[in-house]
Image: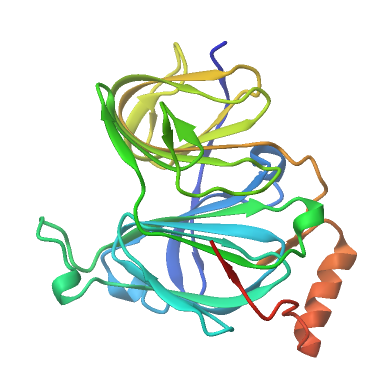
Length: 292
């Protein structure tokens, strides 16, 4: 059965971190039930260095996973345990914050030999950051990093598909997440018609990065900057057009959400406890991060 469209969300321009201009596709109490288990999606993109160079300085996370996918530029990151690295175009960092971590993420322009030979603005930085909720029993799990240097991609008659997590036409994503959420994260560059198998009852979302497409039979064209929320019934989506878009799929947690800034738990008491931990210097519960 082919899924229909339950709704379309238009994001908003905002600022976060130390003044980074970004486009918040969704995120907050008004969308959490619609996008469960996904909490937030930000698109950041500018060739004006002053709009991103101050980045996202040291800040805590608890109770979530963050997924950073980079299209252009680079992001230098480090955490309070001394781990550091750089995300380049076509690479991903998938971080399970779990019980708590302090980190910073600093977007930077490419320099010197890092600049690709193709015609690209060296000052351009573009990417996406997704927040995924953790089930209640994994909120205080040990933090985990997954640095993905290469995402498998295949060309089809209708375009190109890159699979970060989940599976499409036999292509398996490199990120294997042991979570009730069972997330899929797929990037499609479409020039034609395609069908995508999805799991019955799962939340399925599509964010249009560029271009426009029809995301269901007889639907209108949906363009850049819009988020498509599919109905929960059905095991397939049908898409046609000329567009670049991200497809997200995951099992809804259907759990209460208590959310304050970078910390997402299940109750207000847990939020209060987290900020008490920050005040007392006891926020970090695990002194090591697992790398997968």
